[in-house]
Length: 239
Image (tube, rainbow, N blue to C red):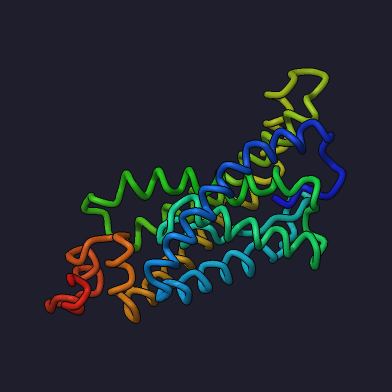
């Protein structure tokens, strides 16, 4: 997913930066507003950021000869939405570019569009579709994480295909070739990532259910059922 420094033509670097900037601006606005209302969310933000950093920093060899890794954005997407996730993802990608040599500064806009924006947008759509259904909330988080992971690599493949269309078949042929490199490894990785983040969300629900209710991620009834408890969750949440 980390497109390396200097790999994309400058025109495409500029285009992806232009697309990414509005999400970052909205993310800063939402994050500042949330922090003014209640700083209690900082630990959960830290957990989300830590998982994005750790999972996206893993470099796992692919059977196709490339490297791949999870993205970790599903948990943040579920809890905080697209714009705040874009800020967390951008910070992670910037740190990785400067310290770990994963990606680069010129291609940071492209990497943000795939991992910090595109994947979360797709995951958030799934979350909204499943939020008020009878689907178990842990299954919802699992599906959000899987979709966010896979769409990240679909967008990365598109970014590469647009910059380097094949001589025969053009962008479509190039996209197929790039995504084929990722898909074999990424599908099982996405499933594993979904399981890990669903377990982390279960842990958050067990420790801080009131925070999830305040954020209106899921209703109190949904959380109570998921916890297998008959009592209501912390009456002060309603205040």
